[in-house]
Length: 381
Image: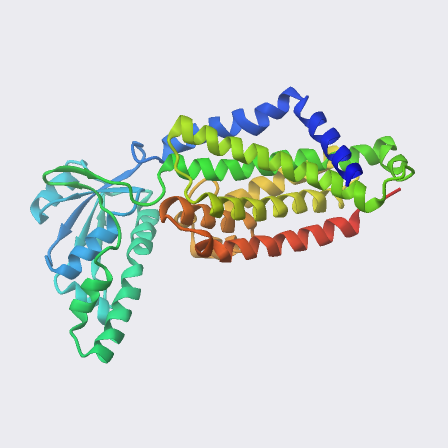
């Protein structure tokens, strides 16, 4: 145990003596968080503004409106039909969303219940349509549950639906009376804080695991195995140093983002469990990459490409809901997507350990695969 601790402390001291390490660990993620958080935050001018017309004016349509207004990428202004036409003609909004009459019956019969109209040449129209479609698709689940409940409870499905959706969503809207603004989901700064913490921890771990290649190139690696320390002790010492540095980086990023940006990360125990599984996965990935390359330069090039591309797929830069269905399915095969899902549950839904167990076990699965590959590829001479 003493030999493991000695190796671990030596590598940690070596890492923290490098000035660039502080830039990579703290300055860069905070800078990216600030930039992307402002870009996608609730106050961003890049948000789409749409007029919202509710022709139905029923409790069901009100739930549809609430569900629509939880979308942080779109600001809705609730107006009448004529005013919506005027706003669109004067380009005060980029489009109009109309909830038609008898919307509940149309939902039940799978007919088109919501109509969209955009300004000519609106390039973002397909993306806005996808956002709206995904935002309200949860209505179908509650509707199906209400219909099943109606059959068993001998009660109108409308009343059961009202009970089920009584606490669903918090409104983020621009109404006729003015702006009603409450948090609904992850803010831009919270999302970016989680995303870029993941990305730059991965970058740091990639750099740290590169020491295995450098030592092999300089001959230090083979000489280490001539010492009284066993292979297991040497590997455990380095693995522990990678893991602890990752934890220090993540912990300080959580503290700094809380102080500087007011991010509330949620349940501490949940964070402990999620970050631990994520770090095991990240260290495993770094060791796996190190096992397939011959030089530190190759590892940096290949590792950076892998990390950036999987971060894009995994929803680090932007919400996964913004990308096409095929990309969302592919995202299930990258660890960042599961980590972001876990952080979203903790930050926005007040989740606890039990709510993130899927993300936890999936990340452990990734860690087991990466570590198995990496350890099997390590060359000791």
